[in-house]
Amino acid sequence: MPSLLREPAPRVRPAPGALVLALLAVVTGCATTPEARTPPPEHVPVLFVHGTDDTAGSFFAMRDAFEDAGWPKERLHAVRLHPNNGQVPIEAVAYQIRRAAEGLRKRTGAERIDVVAFSQGTLSSRYWMQELGGQPHVRRFISISGPHHGTSAANLRSDPALVQMRPDSDFLRELNRRENPFGDTEVFSFWTPLDSTIVPANSSHLPGATERTFLVLAHPLMLSSPAVISATVETLAKPSGP
Image (cartoon, rainbow, N blue to C red; front, side, top):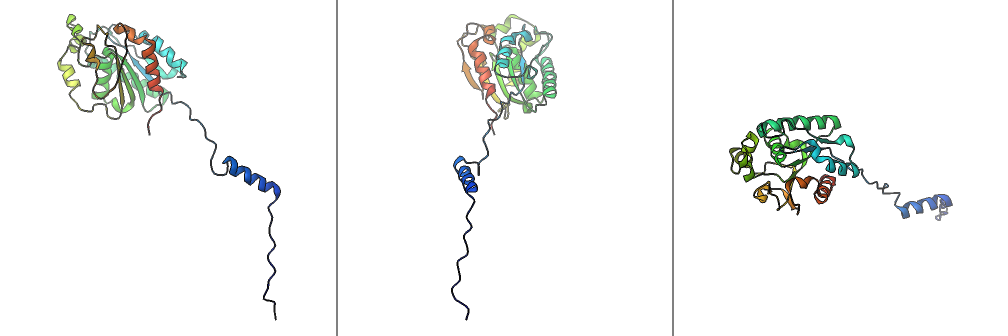
């Protein structure tokens, strides 16, 4: 009669080296979690838009700050608007901004860009975004001292663009009539309560925008203010949302 008791199967002992490696994998997490890597900064291309009687050179200090923060020079472009003295309507200037934005996107391969605009340049940029199809191509828009509700100082000149910047002008009423004109573009408005060019200064208030005020003594000094420059770089350096 065969025996009812069987001999136990022999145990297979792991090699000492394999046991050590397995233990290290558990302790270090290498067995389940890949090594975490910090993603590189986005450095979204930035288009700078100047205002009346200004030039692209108005942004020299700000562009230097972006380069110091790691932006490649080819991803920064300050558009040169012509004429720059308000002798053509804001709508005509907006077409120049559209060409500059399309060129920047094409050169960099970026789907969306950021826009930093100053003074009348904020209105030209808004017209491009709101009326010429630019909004889907803009990730973030920073308005610096923009006359979004007009300025009484524009009453002193009769140039077409200045007439459009007068309080309650037909142009501004049309530009401001829409609700949520910026879609998913993140919008910011930086301005100074001491502005004597945008009168009243709170005309730079932009509904729907994240606002910051700076105690800068004069309108043109906003573009060279260390505080404004730092805030602009910091705002655009933040990663895009999901």
